[in-house]
Image (tube, rainbow over the protein chains, first blue to last red):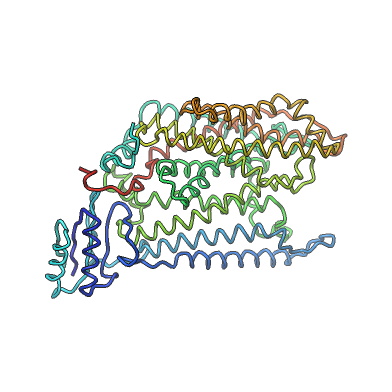
Length: 166
Length: 439
């Protein structure tokens, strides 16, 4: 089941998250909804990201693919170059560079879509709270048997209201 | 006028910034229709060129590059307003950037779309534009990957893609908010474009990470794009083009004209959309200082470029130098120096004179000056080639002038439409705010 709690202060929200984690919930059980990003200090609700690694990997793949393409294309039909190399890193380096960057851009974008969950199948059971300006909602996934305990924790932390969704 | 717009109650901020999307006055309609008609006239002129060939332009032997290439370089330069400025401000976490970034990013995208058309218009047989795309032609030969034109294609495609994503990412949360309160067709549009954004911390975290990474990548791409445009010239041994500083010279010029365009757009939006509380004097003051810095840098590069030519005293280069400084193009050259250097330094360098109005005047001057700079780089060199017998004159035809005017109209029209469809200032970026402020 899920609990949805509304908070008006960031301090109260932090207190609730820490108390819930202490009570045995993991960061995967918690989700915050707000109209603007909320920044926490490290250790409160960390969301590790592999986006920079994905960007580097995308850059490497696209850069290598573009360079190989240019190499094989230029060798596919051997031009008369008057002694100059058919393929030259100097002259085709621009294409390698731009395609490397394009790979990084695409990888970042698709990783963003994946990591944010926008293109992943969502849990149809998980409710998405309506949020207004200046309010923050904390969604807690828990077992029914422990719900009362968590509701107490949320109330004790200063939430405005808590709702149970099965 | 609010000294700190980010401290206004969030409800008011949202109301103020979403309001322009639901109301369009008669002036807006008049401007859009007028611009649209100019764009149609430009398309008709292009139609004439497609029917009759490049003979309808002022291009001749040896002036193979004319107004189209001038416009191409100019618009690619303007595109540096957005992404580059936005990325620098975002990476340095400059708090005053908030109302400026989206307006700047939109300039980039539209300027690139327009600038990217010119190589195709210039082709003459525009329907063969796909020959630039790397695949073997009828004679089974691949395009020459060592041609700066192919470099341009890859650079511009990368920059357009990156800029579109960079503009789109911070729009997602705003579109999710707009999806809840609008006319049915708009609601559908915003919902589709916001990809089911819910405002969860995972989404915010991924968004901020993606924007930071994109800012870093786009900075590197933006600099490379205008360097590659500069190499279109400097890779040839034409007089005054074969210069090692052309890359940075073009990048500086591009940022310079981009800032000018951004100031004009900011002032226009401020007035027409009543954003006086958001685009405040501080923003114009900071942008004016940036414009002033770029003016000084531009002057340094221009001096450096010309003094080297003059001191080298190479006859062909001196021919172009003479054309520019005391020959047929002298009036335009000195006008360029006046509006690109004397005017900004006077109006923006003297603190008492610095205001929104003077920033706009200086910016208009810079746009004219930078267009002239591109003209003076392209044309005098081509009319004074190394082969003395090939000397020629170039006068742009009505077709070229009409297409040029149409692109300015297209820019205004696209911008007005964008400002009516999407909030021109990122609403969610006005963080943090507290419930007390909301009350």
